Amino acid sequence: PPRADTLASYIHSAPPGHGIRWYEPLAVLGGIALTASLDESVANHFRDHRSQIGQDIADAWAKVGTYGVGAVTAGVIAGGLISHNEKVTHAGLRLLFSVGLAGGAAEGMKIVLGRERPYQNTSAWDFDPGHFDTSFPSGHTTLAFAMAASLSDDIHRTWATVGLYGLATGVAVSRVYQQAHWVSDVVGGAAVGITSAKLVSGRWRVFGLTPPRFLIGARGPVIGWSLAFRE
Image (cartoon, rainbow, N blue to C red; front, side, top):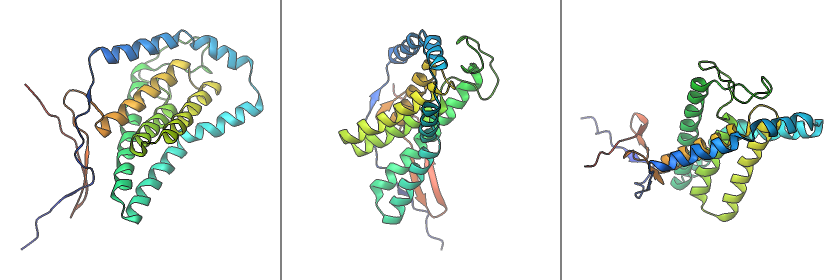
């Protein structure tokens, strides 16, 4: 008879995380709104004080938010599988799902809001919903902070936390310098990236949503995500 399809969990059950309160998202939105007051002045400053060297540095640093995130994610997963180290594999899968969730959320918000970029308009308050390649939130920054939050929680060392968040902050600054984003875009991207990583790891909980579980079975990998309702 065929053997039962037994599944080996690739992520252990996470302890109860911080339940997000209703006022916390409002506080984040308030912070983004405050930084929006700096959007036009910061954009004008970088527009008037640009240099080729600065542009080259910004272009190179911005690639961390795309190619760098992809390379690190693939490297961590491959390293864990090759070395048969479950902890590293766990970290890589959490990172992959964190980046995927953050990127999907950012792209959805871009289409809904349709905010124009600084190089397209000197006004920070022009919105054209339903269009692609828009400004809020910064996709590069979102992915960079999702990677920083995910890996720093797994490594759990001060030097790693400082280095990873510093790297992500550099990506955010580079995108503003490139005139690709307003300041509030990168602040919003950081919020989306960090929140995505914390939800995937289970450190933050919202509406009873449990962390995803990555399973390896006879038919291949499986991703499970459940919603727990409580009275």
